[in-house]
Image (cartoon, rainbow, N blue to C red; front, side, top):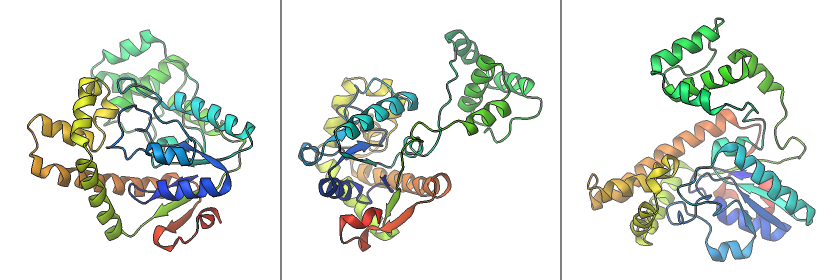
Length: 294
């Protein structure tokens, strides 16, 4: 598995390693699922995908939301297929939650009935929190009670299962991950902050020059804004603001860079606190793709 912050250079090193070692690439990027989101996601080009077979790219229309359960099922099917054909697997991308799915459990099997979802959705935030507290007299643990969405999801799961959050968390912690039967090596590719900043700026300039605004216009016409996960993605939300007159054209690239910088900060924190033990390799020290995984 190869990960790292945005603009670290994962794509080219992944291609080189996969070509050399007979591997196919399984994407772990939460935006590459969507057809038409090409420029703003720095999606591997047709030429790059011609060099190495890629999986889990261009799976669905921009109006169709992806979730972690579906991703895991698709990733498992792709990996099993790759292995049956005698090829190696390289998972690469920087989307933390999807990446974590390869390292341990991230979703339980609790099914929440539509009637429960509708009832919880109709509750005011304070009422939902009060009901959740009543179902969990021993407390809510580390739940972010200031986040209404997380409170609602916790309440749904408690109502659907008849168990407390502590009981659910204990069961969850003991279940194996979807990929527990695989052996894995994980490497994080990184760069010095100044260098990464320069690469981000160059990349954003190239995206705007390649037609990012026109791409967003097309996607908006196709229903982009019906999918909050896609519409709020960096590069897309700024162009939407520009198209709505809320952002000047002269400020567009700088705004994307600023928000990309904030994303990289979050990525670094997530990698540091959520990933299992892994190697960190400065991209500037790499001389040969064989060095990626020792």
